[in-house]
Length: 118
Length: 109
Image 1 (spheres, rainbow over the protein chains, first blue to last red):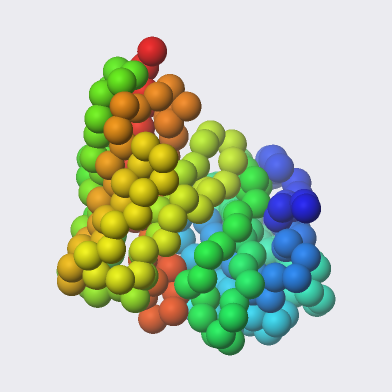
Image 2 (cartoon, one colour):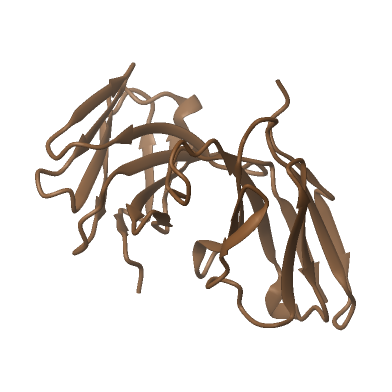
């Protein structure tokens, strides 16, 4: 079985450009999470979806960040415009939540996208 | 400040030594998970503990959940170079996972 797939693995862009990160969750999983990891702040939850519906986006830093999940097998995280402080590793994770809205169940992480904004 | 404090932040030991990593909070968690992350990869779940006082063993790794469900520890016996990595604890708080900053473990041969 394929795990969580993320693309691209590395992204280098200039300040002000739009960045789109992509994620394919594990087939059959009904929850999807976007995290950001930095040395300073560790691993932070940005947003999570359950059955393709955004449940909690309180971790999204600001309006420059947006996320979509048009179907059960695909999600995007977009940053527009990007800033140097957005440089981080962005992880997507998925899980099979037996109870709706229970986002704390065992999560499977993708390999991450390392974003560098210059 | 982190809701979950992990200590030590960094640990460098010789192969064969024992070690303990701690995860502490003032909050009560419904459950707690431990993950291991290698460079360039995502975290991989090691264990979930649910009951206060629970102890789980995974080969040379022993995980304990505090009686009050506010803290946890990970003990590794006879560390191997393959144990090198970032160890993260994550607590279930209001049905969301909150992660600690992690402990970087380096096991030298």
